[in-house]
Image (cartoon, rainbow, N blue to C red; front, top):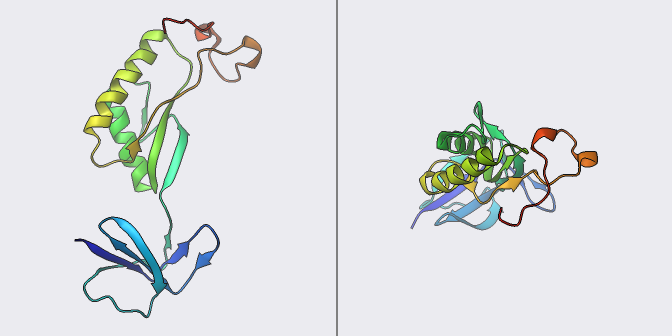
Length: 155
């Protein structure tokens, strides 16, 4: 059983910022938040002095990271982006695609499925966020009008 205590950081909770407390983690799950002066000798100690301790972030709209875009057409785009996001506190992300060519979008789905299986070091890849292609030309925003189309049941 793994036991970790994260001490000396400022802990961000849904209600307030706690200073002078530690987070107890057992088997990768937060168990409790207790004062820093409580001793837990059988725990691995992570000293978070000068840092914030918070839950992982969930990014529901991102087009990539680490110099990769999810529409690049390669599985590596997802893996590098997931690792890059994890380095900055994102634990879950939903890769986003702008409106594009049908074949490019289809390839993104295939690469996502492959990357989801291969991803061991990055933020969780939970699903895809699609921007279009079913927009009104009057409401297209920054979407490329060449790829806008009416919904197709076979798609």
